[in-house]
Length: 69
Image 1: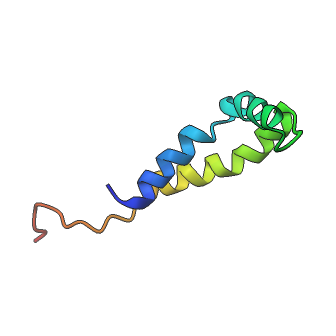
Image 2 (image 1 turned 30 degrees about the horizontal axis):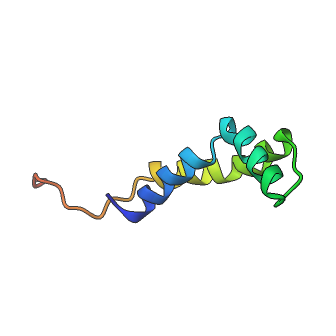
């Protein structure tokens, strides 16, 4: 698996919009940011989309098992 797909999968699972309440609670408890859940959804969505793009991008560098004629 290419590093881009691994990073993409990591971004998808860590930045899902459904994870916004957990990120908001973490930031509030640690005093890092005072954002609400709706603000966290807005922050996490671009990272989620970037993860989708990295994971689902087509470019494969491996050679295929068959030879085209």
